Image (tube, rainbow, N blue to C red):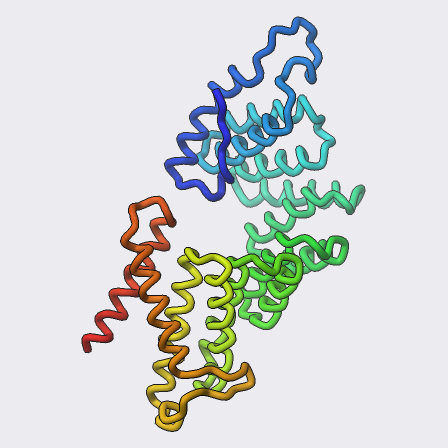
Length: 320
């Protein structure tokens, strides 16, 4: 039997449940051996993929509430790599957090993390578990402080930069959130999802601004969404953002006769032709309609549903 699960965090609920239910069979078949010598590294079919699979199965089992199977996977990892292995320590912490019955128990786990870090400040898996637990306990400021410290030691950690961006965004600190994603793009300039996420943050940041100030930022947002779909022609979030941002900008321009009478707009964000903006909006509509007509499975159901509602809203608005 061969199990090659994709990231358990990207699986649907039904897929994750199905995967976790196969753990028992996987334990029996993947780790069987005819050798009579009771030495761990001889007992198991040794390969990086097999142990990576155990890690993924552990996370999938925790996600679906199969704590017993998750503990079995964790025991195998501890038996093979030892309880002092940093990665195993992080996974054990994840398991303990998942089965913790109440907040006081989580606080005790947090204290254990801090004890480990006091002895070994460079233990990255435990540092990240501590940050995740601080977020779970709604201690956002402490989590930000810990992430900043982590990034000072490891400035190329893309995961940490994106997490820090999300935390800043949750506090309404848009400039800081944008800065974090700009750092990510320095390391991964072709990440279309990050370009789209940056476009979303720029769009959200215009919520309480004047229309004039908003228009300048919306143009930047549109450019981010354009770059996203340029890098990935099928990225539904990129087209959704492009449609939403261009709709709002066109609505603003429709109220301003001076802008409508001009062939282009000059702003601090650069020059943008009205005709180009209309074409981008039409392209987004066309691509979203194409994506929503496809059979289920190409994109997440939630994203497709959101796209359909956006198109329906646009159609209703046009008819009025």
